[in-house]
Length: 433
Image (spheres, rainbow, N blue to C red):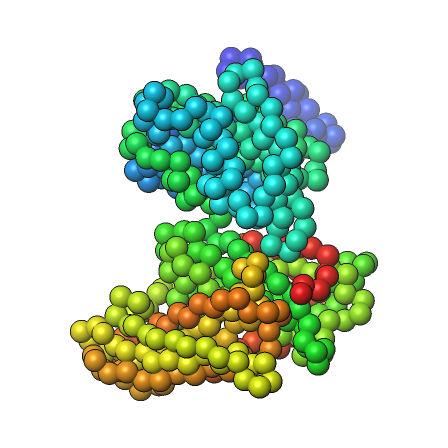
């Protein structure tokens, strides 16, 4: 501090000597560069620490049995590093670490269905590094490095998505080496399955299919999971098609189906390009949210806790899937405008069709029931199973304008600039079955 003060004093004296000379010299302070030196991040539950640049975004999850956090560099929507810690209890009461790793890789990891292990290496500190490939929802390969270690009663799992940017790869390699488990953290003992709750983002695309009907209509269908703790209303879904030069040539946009996507729930979407997929389409981008989008306040919704329904299916002579049944209000209060959503899956559990319809605008009194029926004529494959979800509003809630008997959003040709989004997925534009 003293050297700075003397320097300023010297500047003041020099300026005083220049006064009246007609050639005054102005001394402007040079702004210091932003401090991007790593800072130590401590999980809110105290279960672990890790060093990361101060401008990285953080998403945390802190329960009595799971401490988890995901980190993303500026301008990147999908977190590139996720760390999770659980308490398995005394070492002597749990399987060896290698057995825990085998179980985690085959059964526990949230992406187990789309993940394949390529190699594994024992590290000098007792941890293991597992090299793998994950197939994204669009079918593109994604390189994943997973680090698993045991420290006392605790098990830590760190996963990094290796980006194309070499600088980011180097940053991630440095960060993962700073991960430390706090042996005195207050985590309740649990089993390995608790790690299934570790998700890098609140909203996740868990299924994504593209397909073309016999008449040439191009569909993009899928399913969104809400991994967060708050209900989501009116989540926008946008698909844009690009040519090989990266120019936007078509887009379709709509919202997820249903009144509310509750925490832990799923909601389908379906976008319809009536003029088909342009022949010059080379890649597509799926975006959730969008610039300035925020979920609205959730209205009072009644679901499976108050409504029960039956369902039967058959196929028409044209091969259309027919689903019909009855919904009953088993609750204690009247509800209104019950909305039914149907999600159809193929044998690989990919969404091949999704429809919704408001069954009636009238009230459904306690004990009352009404029938429903769906005819699904356009599907992107052979149906293997389906899910029906029915939600109804309280009497003082108004149905959303999108809750009509619509099934898809029609695409428009456009070449607008890409908006900022909360999550995105890109891939080459190839047809799904």
